[in-house]
Image 1 (spheres, rainbow, N blue to C red):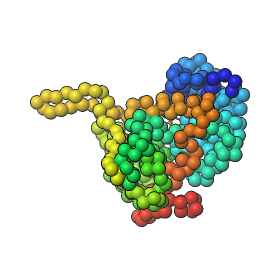
Image 2: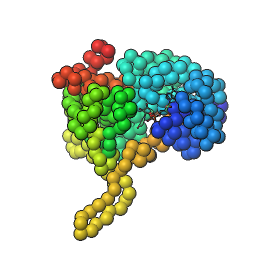
Image 3: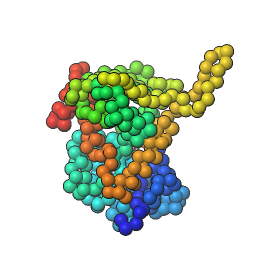
Image 4: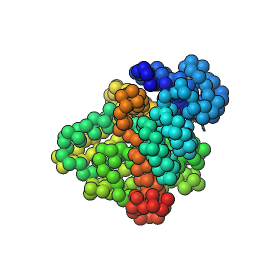
Length: 340
Ligand SMILES: NC(=O)c1ccc[n+]([C@@H]2O[C@H](COP(=O)([O-])OP(=O)(O)OC[C@H]3O[C@@H](n4cnc5c(N)ncnc54)[C@H](O)[C@@H]3O)[C@@H](O)[C@H]2O)c1
């Protein structure tokens, strides 16, 4: 690389891609945003002008640009595999948004290519970089709660996504609870061997048109014997409610918070405060820290704490949960990989 700068191109400039481009252009030490690309040419041009960087007509142009050291993939999940594999073959460092891909075969192909080419790969499971989850991980490693025995997580969205989004999201387990599956594995430092899931379209009956549910409960059985429980909902109304608790033999750690603004109004009518509105606010710090870490790993030639294999493991859990819901019985997680 020569100097201490990583030249980055961002592919996909929607909700999440714009946020990554803005963070990279403005405040990540050692990063230089050099180019952007979106399938919508007007969007590419608008963002390129805003940050004063190159605009690419096709993602392949960014991947083959010798001036680019790192590719940040924020395109729809169905496109991650093709782009990630091409970027790895071109020798670029890769940051890829979650889910890694929507099929086990694609996840395994990405992981194999990353291993063969030896490129650096970080997956966008940003909860691992959230100050709360990261502090919990450190406290567990330091033995603060003894041996971990159980995980419980709640992930509630304030509202249902639009119909078009639900139609192509892969469903609540792949789209939303994938973050829970990854963080449960990470905090418990273990793999999940069996999953049982129940879900229903409780409020938005139209979710059923897409084989999806707006409320789900998932039970996890970990390989070393631990247990886990996850609730997912699209119906919180009051805000974006993300909470977790890890139980150990000597105590528990509770993660999360609900109030966005540090003020509470107390009157005769009662107590009121606001609530975290959405994921961009709740994980604002995590989106920044994960990018700082990605650039640091490239500069220091270090392996990121979350890679392609983690994407495969989380996807297997999501697919197992989906299958369990359909079959009405527990599903062995690795059986999903064997059966495809
Ligand atoms: N980590 C998180 O918390 C988080 C949050 C939201 C989204 N995501 C992930 O980020 C990715 C993008 O999601 P989003 O919410 O920003 O979606 P979005 O629909 O807002 O944006 C996607 C963008 O990609 C563009 N695009 C489509 N096909 C393309 C292609 N072949 N090449 C280049 N651009 C293409 C679209 O025009 C659009 O602007 C998804 O994989 C999603 O799962 C992660």
